[in-house]
Image (tube, rainbow, N blue to C red; front, side, top):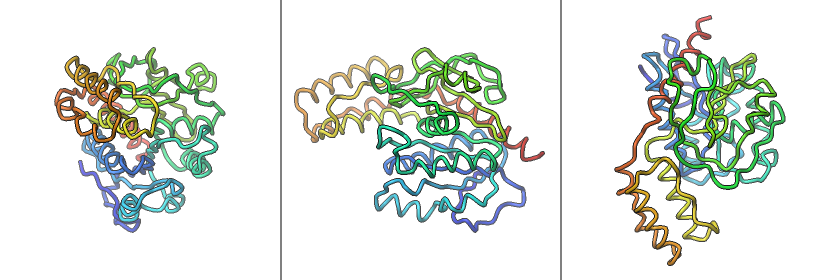
Length: 317
């Protein structure tokens, strides 16, 4: 398999007619390159020998620092170049919310335009986390609800329906989640969304809606690498130590073994008794990271492989 990342909008397309996937990467600056790598790796593992060309975009209204702007200017296409394009599939990531209501986000108009465009210009699209919440709100007026605390960790998800996207999967699999909001499953069902997996802790996990294009929604993060949740947890700890947040973050559940939990709990006690930014140097990241598992990877690859197969089938029609 050859995964081709675009350099400019004028890049030559292989005569072998690769599957073209647009990745609208809206993650914060600190996760911009990591997200590129995560989806490149996942699509590569899911390609089954097919050639995939990835074109990079980002919502222009997102605030970016100098380094991220330079990265986007060098590697990404302007979103305006997507509108006249023909692509096979689209992946749209979430971002950290700034407003309490999604409709008040500065990128709302562009994101909803992207949802409408994807319905008539792609064979299928994947909407991840906040992007899933925004798409469902725009399409069917379903508002997400705020959770009592951040949902963070690795959770066991149960297969809840039959569809090509979950073909060949086990009855249960693990998936990371990292979010503050949730979409009520009963409202999704009432608007003809098909829930493909769920758990008591996370609610609806993967779900789809079929129209002119197959829309796939994921509230979790199957693309996450082994240590991504650890890095996010450390970031939130750093925000507590620097007084950017009031409370110490809840430890991701189902992710750390007993020894890692003990080490992180010990650090928490230090942080609560001596809250200062310098203490972050003692955060036991290396000790914890070497003990982490990657139990969700196989299921993630399987379902993305099913999605790539769906794109290939539609492309050949």
